[in-house]
Image 1: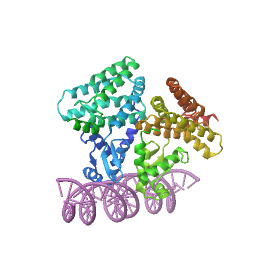
Image 2 (image 1 turned 90 degrees about the horizontal axis):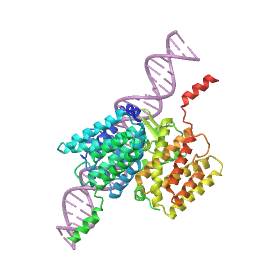
Image 3 (image 1 turned 180 degrees about the vertical axis):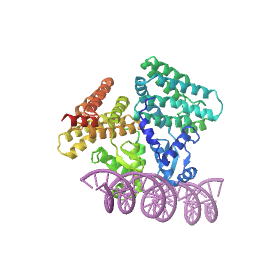
Image 4 (image 1 turned 120 degrees about the horizontal axis):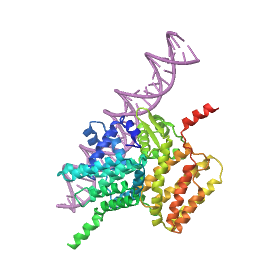
Length: 236
Length: 236
DNA sequence: GCGCAAAAAATTGTATACAATTTCGCCGCC
DNA sequence: GGCGGCGAAATTGTATACAATTTTTTGCGC
């Protein structure tokens, strides 16, 4: 597979301790092992990974640039807790960029790429039929990976990195506001998108992608929670 | 003006030393006071701002996340030196997102926003008629600001921040590969885009924006430099 | 003068120490 | 029982120290 960041991956073999800690925390967030709002103290992180606060701090700062962690001056770092408005913006951003990424990917896609996407779909389907929290988490990851793989195929490292951020932040939003217990990514919708790409019907593929994103968003309950709580309190 | 990051700006009044240093360095890069490839040692940066290496390091790390600085393990930090391929990707990313941002901005734009955009155009025009390096730099900044203001009007903080990164990185690319001495942003093109937005002809506005971005990119000389150098050497 | 090896200097990576700020726990009062 | 004040503990912000790595300088031989 062609990859715009293949060169960077060679570089990443020289990655620092802070980057490894960042990656581990990101994974824990995306896989819902760390909940939105969780306090991440530098000491705790440092102790957990057997490093000093220096590396913990660097890792948390890096995650704050990605929007996964919120660092508040003098108060510490927390797993980000996106507001409903922020959630809307994340999905608006996805609607804005994903069709374009899809078009770029479709222009460059190879049969091997298609195979890999299909393989990912199989894996997704397999995880859906499994029970347990671990399978749920892996399923969430696999479904996000579909979008990330398209971004990778597009060959634009900048868009790929942006997409990585959007997907990670989406998973936070879904963890917070999702109403269904599934991954919220319609498994069959991924298949339909691939099929449309294969038949070179890009308008249809983009339409399906937008529908897919809307579907994910529709599953979220983004009503203002505080207002709702008060309203319900007085109606009882 | 409505701004998606107005709340964050209140927060930024509590910004740390590292963030102020990051901002100062970013400005120096964007305004071409720091050239692509310049080494930025932690000690030098710390001495320059009268802080220890800790804050310098944090600032440089932040800038590396934005793509303006390249941090190489054990070797130090350098003002980024985008390759021709990277340059192409930056402009491809702009072509992908800017029409969408423009449409979102157009949907929300107020007469006050239009006034402000026009004011920016006036300023751009004024700077164009001035001589000197300082005016050149300010002109470059003002022309990038047009794009940033549209992103701000769009009301999506995530897209706004991404656009900030793209504009900053574009200015590095233009500094490196630009052939004309002007800002490369066609001043009259900004005006045409505003006019199209005002008449609600968004298809035309988007077309103009794409043309505008293409115009900027066309002014770049992205041929591989080394090959060209050797070729010329043997032809002499 | 050039190339190589070794030493010295500079710089980066990380831990630790100290200063500043926030949070927590306890106590007294209403 | 709740609130406020105060002191202690915890945590964050930043400088400094030490270890590791890279770069530069020096000395020597050809």
